[in-house]
Amino acid sequence: MRIVAGQFRELTQEDLAFARQIGCAGITINKPDFDSPAWVDFLKSQFRAAAGPRPKRRRWSAMELIQLRSAVEAHGLALDCIEGVPANWLDKAMLGLPGAEAQIEDFQATIRSMGQAGIPVLGYNWIPDGVWRTAKAAHGRGGALVTGYDDALGQRVATGRLPARDEAQMWANWERFITTVLPVAEEAGVRLSLHPDDPPVPVLDGVARIFRSEDSFARAMAFADSPMHGIAFCTGTFAELGTEAMMRALRRFARAGRIHYLHLRSVHGALPRFAEAFIDEGTVDSVAVLRELLDAGFDGFVIDDHVPHLVDDTVWGHRGRAHATGHIAGILRALRATRGGTA
Image (cartoon, rainbow, N blue to C red; front, side, top):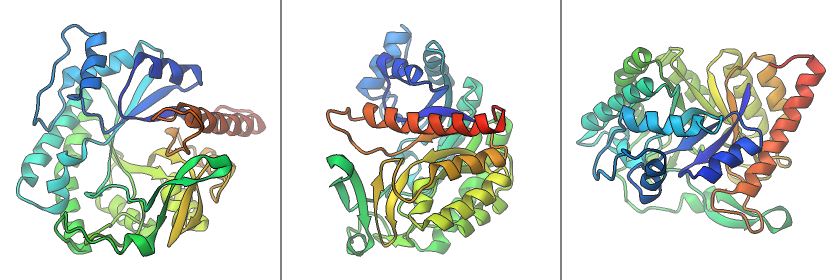
């Protein structure tokens, strides 16, 4: 088990140095837009021949991923995972709209590029309308800014922005997708890791959210039963259903070897109302989570996730992430010391 710095949407030399300085073994990148000015500048700073903007594309090339991996490795870090493609690269596939097949073909091409570049994990979700929160800047411990969700407010939202889809439709769309892309992932040697719907409620704004429980993940793992298909297990999202539900799902899927990596964060409360919390408070017991992973022989990686925004912090949250990563590292070191090993 390794600790990795996560959630980078953009990268700088300073970000990579920071990840190394706080003791991380690698990084993950979250839904990068390699055509954005920040990414173009970063890649150009590393490679003279780095590609410039190519508007309207919906896939990544092996060359730019190789360049990215090389830049990360130059800092003594591994590029462990890319957590998802930009949201508009899979929205038609999720909703079963015209253009779905083209998006799936592009996703297959991205998987092949990932394999050629030696990047082992590609995260994905099935949430066309994204993560929802009804409070974006609530006050947590010491006045730190946190997000929260109240389902009574969330269920009032009716934008009509996306076409309504029930559970049967969303499951059919996902089954069509995974049946098509998983063989490509198996051939390319890339693990696809499914993240739960956040918040894990049945429906929001007319669109069913199907990956919201232990049972739904069991169904998904049984349908796509392959070492190349697993779970990006988010303790915070599962804990939004209750701590016991989270630990039960963690135990089941960790012991089955279906968790590829884990987001470790905590919350106060559970549905219908919760707020995000510092990693050392709230309902998630980090010691119990990491002990369970060690007991299961988990050999993936752990990252922090959403962190409270501290005083004078950056957009990415360097201060909050240093706190969370140090918390994880300290617990893991103590647990390993009691076992006399380095699992």
